[in-house]
Length: 143
Image 1 (cartoon, one colour):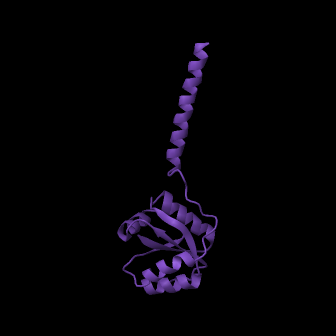
Image 2: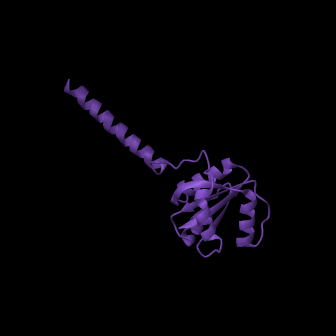
Image 3: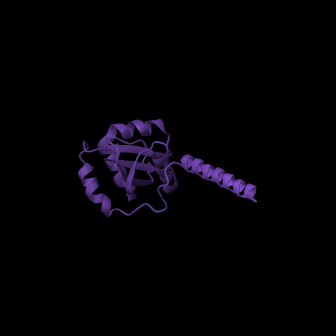
């Protein structure tokens, strides 16, 4: 289990990045993403990476089920509209962030998709429609 620090220009970009993490990177988000003070996110980034190019305007922290190497590998393959940093147990601030996470306000407006992949849901709907058509044709042929 690791934390993802997501920094962006606005919450819409952060929510889009979260959706990309869930849908395209196929990472398992645990709980609700939490809003983090942008200045604190910048300080955390300075501590972990040694510096920042540009301060962020909005930030959030989210817990995921996967380990750090897997998360990094998956996130590298997508191109989210926000800056994402993986924070693992190896980083000194990790236990403090885990402790503070429940105290942070939740990010409003983000909802995980319930049925998994949208493409799979669409395939299931189409299969259901085909079965319905066959059933209706069967009933019509009985009369």
